[in-house]
Length: 248
Image (cartoon, rainbow, N blue to C red; front, side, top):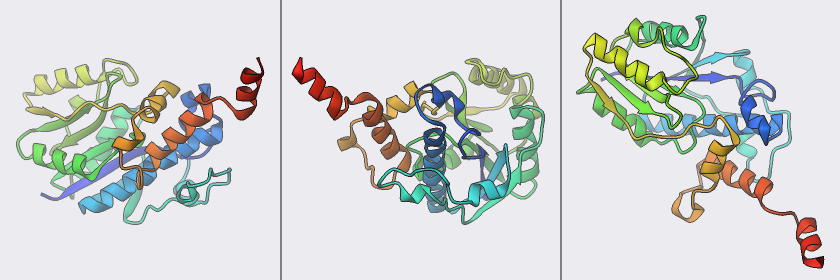
């Protein structure tokens, strides 16, 4: 079936994204985490052959395409200027997240048989996840990817149901439950993907940084590599601290 993938994203620039990571990271590093997730998402979606739409807020299309002005750690030059080849940019429209997703779903489903809406802060994204969602949509009305915080990182649909996006406590731990209740009220069949953890706070990023690097293919995965780099930077003692410790 003809599938479109809709990525919802803020502008990946310092001070405009991932502000809750600022409890540990600089504003430039917060933006780099977001850019790494977008870099991975673009690469993996290209493998699926699905049409990609980037629904943005907090700035302009040019903010995504312009080179990053901040310092880039060694080994992450690919985050300087992101590649969005094949993506069509769309401005988010609506008063809250639910209204914006519903508007995007209704708009896109005029031209596509099914859609997959994704958040833009999920390290370790793979094309297999998109392919599996397509398979589940063949047998279900809605597919959901549960997030560890009680929300969801993905929703797949063949029709735009307004009820799935209204009266939802966005940003709370009740988002997934309320969405499932709405699907039940509508009599929709639902399938679930494996639970994943999107990155909102330092503890979320540390979760990915603590994954054993020898068990992961970090070559292409910018977000996982960056999580490991930042974990070492902020949790490993510096040479000066080690010397001071040894002197005592």
